[in-house]
Structure formats: C-alpha cells, structure tokens
Image (cartoon, rainbow, N blue to C red; front, side):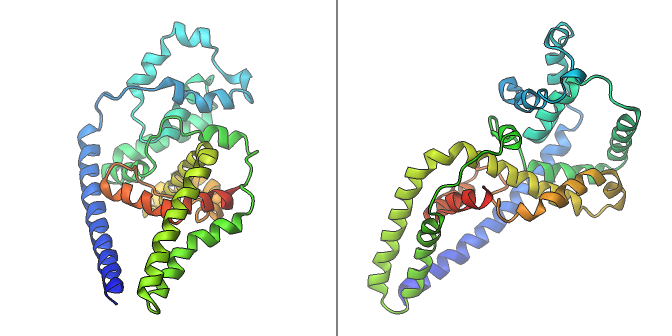
Length: 287
C-alpha cells in the first residue's frame, strides 16, 4: 500500500507542477511577443534548413520561380533576414519559397492584404494567434518537407510487440495491489527493458520520428486556429480550415509534445515517453 500512496502523490505533484509551469510559460511568451512586435529579427537564419521546402516544391513549379542568379543579384537573402519574423519552421520555409515565386495572381494578393489588414486592426487577436503558432515553434532540420513530398516510409514489423511492452508497466502497477514486492520488481524490469528497446530502435526511426513530431505540432496549431473564437478571422482562413479537416483524423495518431523541450517538465515527459515506448508506437500508427 505504501508504494501505491507514493505513486499517487508523485502523480498528483507532477500534474500540479505541470499546470503551473504551462501557465508561467504562456505568460512569459505573451510578454515577449508584445515586446518584439515590429522589431528587426535578431536571430540568425539557417538557410540550409530553411531551403528544404523550396528545394522540394521547386521540382513541381519551376516555371514560376526566380532563378538563383537573379535571387543573389537582388541580395534577397538580406531581404529575407530583414522580414523573417515568423514563429514556425514551416512559416519561414514557406516565406523563403514565396519570395522565389514570380508575381502572384490578383486574388492571392488581395487575400493576403486582407489578412494583414485584419491582423493590424486586431492586436489582441494577433497576439493570441502568435501564441498558438509558438506552440509549433522552430526546429531546424525537422525533415518535414521530405516527409511531405516522400511518403515511402516503412513500418517497423511486429508492432504488437511494442504495444505489449509499452503497456506492461501499467499492468504491473495494478499488480501492486496483489503483491507489492514482486510486481514492484517487475515494474522496474519492464521499464529497463523498454529503455533498451527504445535505444535499439530509435536510431532507425529518428529522422522519420522528427518529421512526425513536427507534423503533430502543425496539426495541433491548425486545429487551434480553425477553432479560434473570432468569426472574422475564420472567414480569412477558410483554406486552412479546409486543409485541416482533411488531416485532422491523424491528429491523435501523431500526438506529441507541442512545446519545445526547454524546461525540466518537458524533459521529464520525454523520459516518460521512452519508458512506455510511446514514440515507437506512435511511429507505426502514422505509417
């Protein structure tokens, strides 16, 4: 019984600390967004990573793109660095691609101008939206563009084995009611085994797993934006909502941490995922 009390207190403490950490993080984030609005970007653009989407997309629309010679003659890298105030990797990758495109149609330009005007006139809503986008964040070399254009990823065979191993610790936790000593030892043994399995297979799936994680963040942000309270904003982002409806069935399958692993809580959650093989099981479900 003492072990049950210990795990219960540990779980409750973890939940309380997590809620407080999320609250403080959001408060600091809103303050930073407001302070940085309209400022020249201070971060360094990693063009090797940023070019990923453009290199893939340019294979399908070469006739509409500015060539590299013209791009460098116009010093467009410097222009890009000056205006790159994006909050996400997909945002900065798409911005880089858009700047390579020849003049867009009148309808596309009007739609963008309408959205920009709405954001200028609604500063509170703009901050809310930026907070949502920060949930997706930036990850260099996230490999998502390759995942988007190349779907030939292979599942790891015998996926049911990982499901069984991932759920064994929970079964053994219930067994504490029967025999705390034996099932306590089994819990430790199963967690050590899962750590070993994760170490062996994580090397194989790391590039694809990174893509899936970022795809999960994109879906999370798209869902939040599609459900945003402002009807005016909903009218402006109908294309996003339509696209999200196509992929939202994958949201649960690609569920992952939507915040960067920068705090002690984020790192702790990552270790918990390793102990229960969540990453490997999630990988197989999205293939």
